[in-house]
Amino acid sequence: IAKLVIVDAEGGSTDVVVQFQLDPQEAMDIGEAERAAKEVNGALASAMDDGKMALALAHAAREEKGWTSKVRDRIVEEFLFETEDDDEDKEYSGSDEEDDDDPVDDDDSFSSEDFGSASKNESESKKGIEDVEYDGPFGMDGDVIHAKDDIWLGGGNGGVFFDYSESNRINSPYKGELGPYLLDAVTERARQNQPRVIAIGDVHGCIDELQLLLRKCDYHPGDVIIFLGDLVCKGPDSLSVVQMAREIGAIGVRGNHDFEVVRWHQAIKSGADPPVIGSEHYYVASALGTADLKWMYSLPWYISSTHLSALFVHAGFVSGIRLAKQNPRLMMNMRSILPDGTVTSKFFNNWPWARLWDGPHTVFFGHDADRGLQKYEHAIGLDTGCVYGGKLTACILPERRLVSVNAKREYFQYRRKHFD
Image 1 (cartoon, one colour):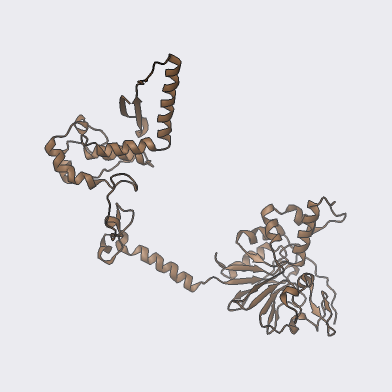
Image 2 (tube, helix red, strand yellow):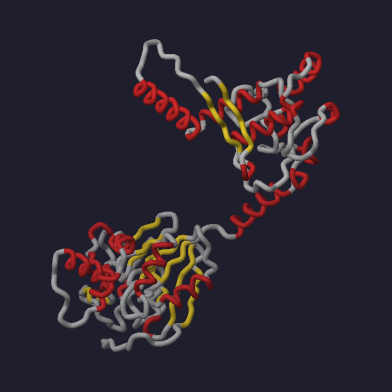
């Protein structure tokens, strides 16, 4: 490289002009020389693009003793930092003694003396100060090396890390109070609102009531939402319910209507024809997005929590049978157990399955809107018939506090037969 020129360009930027000459060891024709020149130009452009040239020029500028500290700092800043506002006035670090010695105005213009040779005495008098004056970005050659036990990096390393120690609080931002105050506020909030588990009964597409219920439960990110199945069908907006459940990171168990949606999706993938008579399950399976379908597929038959001593299922369990041996079809559909042990999905008023469940875990379930809110020693039913014009109900754990909101209207006509 024969010459390198730094020129102020419009807009406050800096152009770097590099002039070089080729000194081939062997004779080359004009074509070879042009190709070699292009390779050198390409290498220089690449060095500018990947930052190597800027780092090298900034390092060379810091070592240039013929310039004043103001010029050096400006050149280094232009090579290593992007300004957010080119018209904004810049301030450059420098001691009062240097300002007195340097005949430089406060604007961005520089006189020839700024780039001229400094006298030997001046250079020697400033050498000790200038070597540590500019700290520069981390990792550059010449950075100040702080002692290993200096955890504040020299009192803050130019404001990157502030020293909040008791002895330096007066020099810290907001006198050291803001950071601890914010930390205390976050800690206190966590103590007052520890993450909770919120079990929610059958939603059936009632998106408005679901949003109202979460507000009434004072839901905050971090709380675990567990849907007790049947998020979809019968109500006004099944798609939005599934999307919202997925987006807030909720989990849940598979209800009989959720199961039918999954079955229809599998049938659609297998090339099955649409149903002759319109099916809401088919519509939901066809309209759900990929992410929401994956969420539906992920719903298990039941969820167990040893910490809460709780089980979550859509319909129920048969007492006396291990969880691993429970029938999935019954877990999604059962409502009653008759005196002879027959398990049925029909509503027999005097024979709810939950009356036979003897724990030790408490079961939280839905599916049985006929009976409404059910409270037994080891079982709590939360399907309170929102889609039929009733309520949408949640149970907040571990305190087992019940919260409900009224349905805005009846979305689906109630027509189930009752048996005694």
